[in-house]
Length: 134
Image (tube, rainbow, N blue to C red; front, side, top):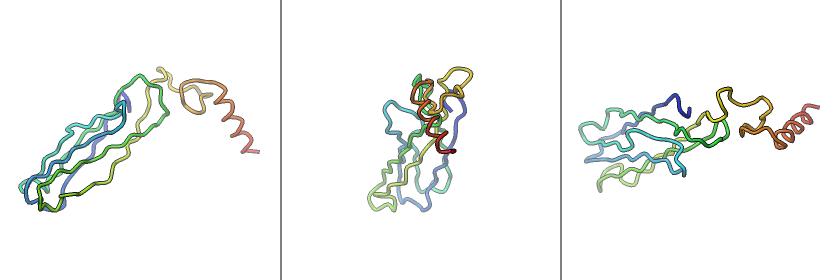
């Protein structure tokens, strides 16, 4: 949630990396929607099986975005040559972010598309929903 609750993810290796493995956690959106801390994790032969926790927080921007909206965390793995993790590309993680920029009362009930504005687009969506019910 922007300006509120955070979430966490845990990263752990499944095999001894035979050296050092660096995992960089990045969010490619511009402007940034998420902050991951720490953003760099280090694993080696001594700690590879110990889960490392990353705290994920939504950037409290002033943009009025859809509620919820999404962003993605990607992982860059840097491993020594010969490591079982050399060239490994983990799947990205999609994060849903709750919006907080429509005032203290949240979205108006007539704001059907949740863009913080009640306008002709909302009337159009209402009409389409109403016609589908018939």
